[in-house]
Length: 70
Image (cartoon, rainbow, N blue to C red; front, side):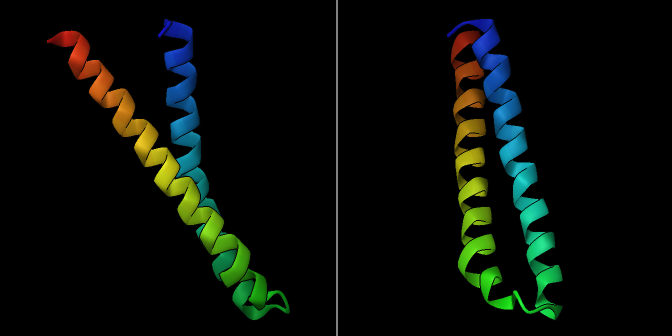
């Protein structure tokens, strides 16, 4: 994997994990509005999907770093 791709994947993984926190906070603010139904059906599943994909990508990149050093 080239160096540019690796940097791009690091940025994407960090954005996905950060997006989880943003969606969770925004979903919590919807509790007091008419859009409270959207919170459980859209924001939380997408947030957890972002977290899972971001963590898997981070884990893959970290394992790739350790493989290169050994």
